[in-house]
Image 1 (tube, rainbow, N blue to C red):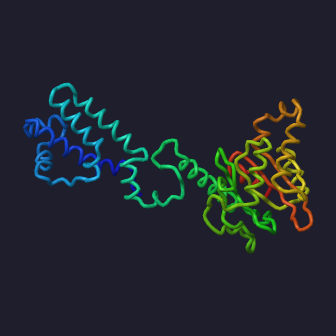
Image 2 (cartoon, one colour):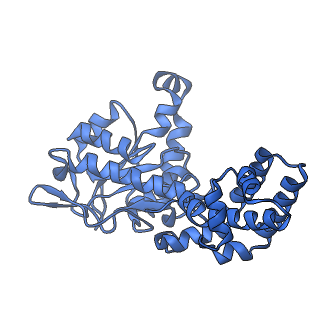
Image 3 (cartoon, rainbow, N blue to C red):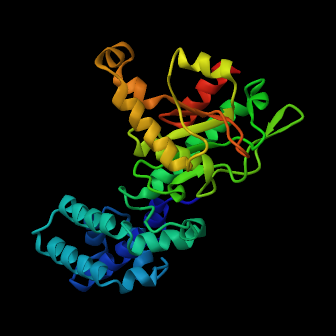
Length: 314
């Protein structure tokens, strides 16, 4: 693991200091004066002068870096720029080059895993969706650990298998939902996880979650378990519970059921349970149809919370 700050320290700063030292020497600075201006030792200046410090040619050839060196060198030589002002100028350029630019490219070369990420945004952008995607994947892993460590959870896995899913905040399709590839299955009383969570690998549970959100739910995660009337009755005591029709297309049936239930709740229900609590935690279920196994879906704000609710009923 290598951080972009290491690229700045190892590649950018030695190159820029070397360029500045050369620029100041060309302006008539002595070795001692260069050392004072840059806040480095005279021996370091000597190394720069004799080419003993390797330069990154891509940094040297960047027009913005060249402009920076000339601007800072001129300012320090004339006295118009203090060392603090010079530092600020350099820091500003570093921040610019870190955001999907030269330093970001050098970082991806130093850590190929970043370049290989199948996303359309930059890891170095603080507003990038990559950070959220990694957060969601980590959340699904925590939810999985909660379930697989719960004694008796395997007995709740339906015949079609179970899954743990969580979506991005602006999810629109199954590609925006992280889940286990394949499904969790019961193997001799143990819940087996076939692989690490990925985006776009859940069709059914992800569709139920997305449909519930379209119907007005704020839940971002879901876990499916086998249907049992007593289980549903127990969940209904603490959580909003909604049935949908298994004979209709899933997305349509779930969306309309959630919308209908939300519209039917009165002010007394909201005051009693708290509107946020009702919207975040939601239990959806269908009692089966020809060729369709009855299933219960526990929805919550995130995967660990959905797993916690399921663990309560084990």
